[in-house]
Structure formats: structure tokens, C-alpha cells
Image (cartoon, rainbow, N blue to C red; front, side):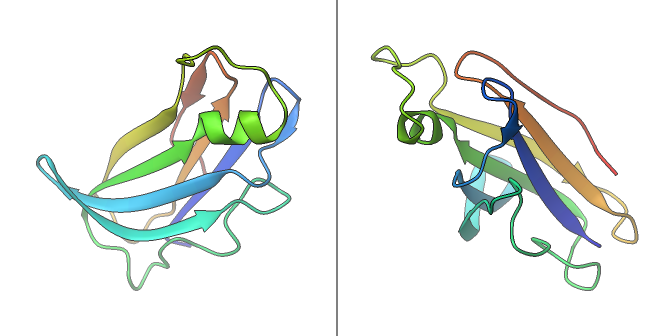
Length: 116
């Protein structure tokens, strides 16, 4: 399956439908944009970000527009808000495995892990 992501909105108790996300490849401090996408009604991209044939070993970054999502949901956030964009840097060592990067997020906290 390659690489995928899923975002759960822990404030509202459901998928973060409509959140904007950007995927980058990284090398040291340099990042190259691969794609931008909007999460679907299940809080996921419409397909894998990379399939097993195109996923390469290396480092990647997912950037989630947390503030934009919660503002669009009508949540009153202070200025500046506590979380703006959440960046997750991660590595892919085994391209024959599935790398799933879930994000659980509220306007004030987030957590992630390597999912299945």
C-alpha cells in the first residue's frame, strides 16, 4: 500500500474532513513539495500518497493545516493560535512495507504513531 495518512479531530470526535495537507520529500534541511491535497469525508487522502512501486527509502514530511481546519469549523482560536501547521518528519526504511501516518489533533495538542 505504500504511504498513507489519516487525521482524526479529537475536539469534535470524528475525521478531519476538509483539512489541507502537503507532502514533501526531505534531504537535510531541504524540502521538495510532492503534492498538496484535501482530506476526504473519512479524514484520508483519496488514494495512497505513494504506492509500493513509487515509494522510495528516505525522509519525508507531512504538513497539516490545523489552524485553517479548525477556523473553517468555526472554532474561535486566539491570535496567534497555539497550533498553526503541524509538521511531521519521518523516515521510510522498508519500501515493501506499508507506512501509515495517522494524526490525532485538537487546536491545542496532537499525537502520531506509525500505523498499520
